[in-house]
Image 1 (cartoon, rainbow, N blue to C red):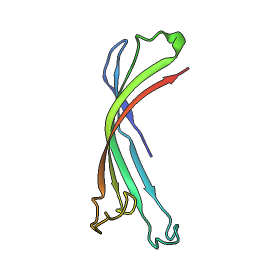
Image 2 (cartoon, rainbow, N blue to C red; image 1 turned 180 degrees about the vertical axis):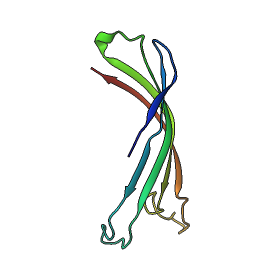
Image 3 (cartoon, rainbow, N blue to C red; image 1 turned 90 degrees about the vertical axis):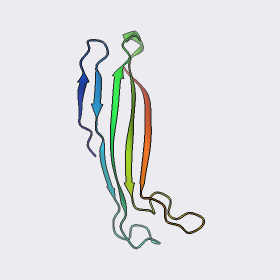
Image 4 (cartoon, one colour; image 1 turned 30 degrees about the horizontal axis):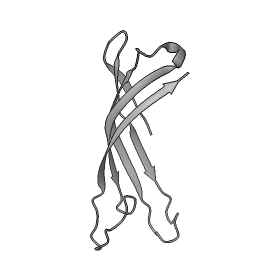
Length: 103
């Protein structure tokens, strides 16, 4: 995966950073005994983050982030068919929200 990022709003205390996560996951052929095919997923998203500068530095560096990721995957990866045997979509939007702290 890759996650390029850049600052979209310059601010001394509260700069806003945009990142674009891109991930690809693919299985090996016949990796699972009951699935004689390869399968995988592709994820792309848009995430924004901002430091919480009002928290004193002796408590660490805090960041708040939010965004949306879009998952494209084989039907088997997202849960296969429903109880009625109908195929599910192979697209799933995922909302993300995070609070992080580092020293």
